[in-house]
Amino acid sequence: MRIDPDSFAGGYFENAVYRHWDPYEDVPQDDLEADRERLVADEPTAAEFDEFREFIAQFGAGEEAVTEDLAPLMIALDDINDQMFVSSQIYEEAKHTQFFDRYWREVVNPAAETLGHEVTAPTDQRYFNEDYVAIFDATEEAMEQLLTDDSPEQMARAISHYHLTIESVVAQTGYFAFQSIFSDSGRDDVARREWPELPGLIDGINYVRSDEGRHVGWGMQKVRSLIQDAGVEPQVVRDTLQGLMPRVVGASATDSEISRTEPIAEFSRDKLTRRVEIITDQDATLPTIEELTRVEGGESAAGH
Image (cartoon, rainbow, N blue to C red; front, top):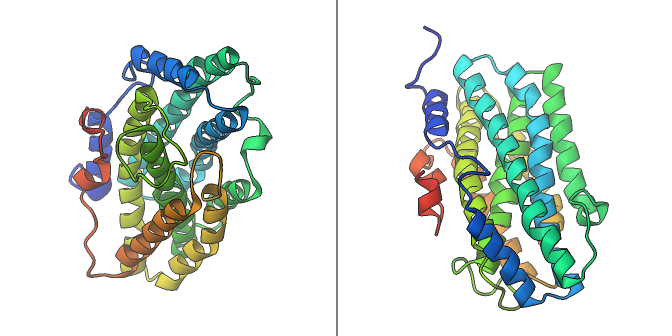
């Protein structure tokens, strides 16, 4: 029997099946309508609303990019349990893409029209700065190299780019900002002013975070295994993560009409430091799947 449901990847695959959610059925229409109404009632300036759209556009574009970019990883992996898990991850990234597309269609554009602001596309290049583009270009390149170099070192670099940087630092920083600004959880010093709570956005983010906690956990375990069992030098991982960090800060921690730099940059640095410690310290304990899929203020979504 090639499938081992008791393996690390096998258990994560089963968890993905158990926690399945539908971007159209499980995010209530009423919550999206509430978001639209609250945004309109808040009357954000054109600059504020455009930066709100930038948040949404960057998440949607990121999910779409990795839906495609992860394919070489599944090809390069040898173990069927790992392959099954990554297949579930690609499917989930596609669902995340669908959620952000739905949010743009049903909340962002209608609110822009009502407020009298310019209606834009989520692919408008104004929403993606040089650092953001560089992170995803580097990840795409690292994954594509697996098709010609599937060595343990290149596998560690590729997973460090996506699972440990984009998902574990960039995306987690974005969730932190979203929850701090648009819900009653998070940090009070992130938002520049009080914004309305957006239940539809937070509903979707909670589901996405639940999925991506699992993705991060698999990536951490895989890289740690490559270090401890396949002889990859820990410095390979450190160099990859630290080399990407300036881009991470540049992409997600800039002063804006909506948020402040320092608490977001601090969150990113702390997250990166902790990930490096856990992966490179053989005595460190990996977070459990329950810890990785738990979301603050999102118990109903995470527990689906």
